[in-house]
Length: 442
Image (cartoon, rainbow, N blue to C red; front, top):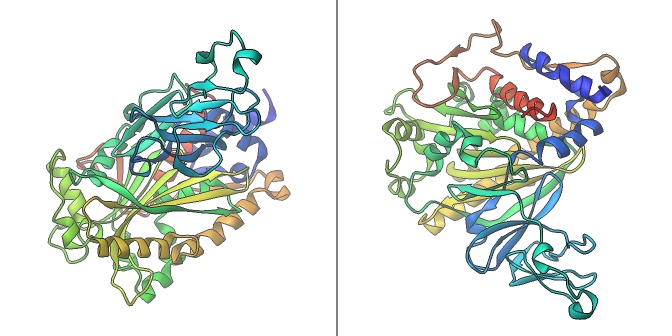
């Protein structure tokens, strides 16, 4: 057994003690295994259906560090195609987004339709007489599926179907994104910026690190960008919805309790909400919810909350999707989408967009708070002394007899649920699944 395999084999036992090895956030070998064993097998978010509404629309996205074309083909089907010419491997998509009936390699001119089929090449009858073009199309992702307009792809033909992979998380996605008949759509373009921090730190934070809000984001409450007081905000639930997938609710115990309902969305928006296919329990949780944050394993997160970038404006409900794209062991590219329900009045959409970008955009108030410690965590993870002493990080809040968190037995939804939100089991749930993939488990 190699040294790295021996080290990752010990991680599950560390996690059972509420410990995580410090090297997890900045190790070239760990990063290599993530690209080989995790991102080639898990279901990864690649975009929202509203980003490619018309036939021929495409955007360029990544699974791990591999480039893919997310395209609505000429027949209206959604495809995820590896952006690599089958001749020499040159990338064939020359823009980040657009509309195209075909993609042409700039090196030798091999041309592919937006279905991925090879349709032509210069002097093809002379140079490639007898070539079976049907065998040389762009390589598709092994599986593509969607839920509530969120498009996912897996590079593993043997991976379970998407809804099986999501498990209990589907119940919560229904609760959050299934409130209207029209569904959601992306507002504007996703923001993108590069940070010298490991991708897992963002996924970890959004799995349910509510504890940092009491201290790191204290000023946000002081200046009025958040409506709920910090201590009251800690009341609520941590949910391990399924292996790897976790979320956290700040929620009112009583539906008549003062404070935001339906995550603080304007009444003109909440009037569109209906129980529909949701259970009474799902609709009740949505109605009482103040803030919801979560991570769909491995690297898609979301936040639904009433926030404002400027205390001159009251907090407004917003939905943001966040993706933590690895760019080597010590760097990630953060993608940030803002969504709104179809039919939302334009002035509310604009206010929601400004609030989202001003809090969780490249220069957002919360973003500036978070990114400083995330970078220093990554730097620490690469220290020689930390490796020499096998530094372990503490994830023991709520673990065994530490703290006073209790498991909630009468919660109506799936998963393991704990209250209040002073606990770190949701993050351990993320890392157990991460270690599962790194160890090559089926």
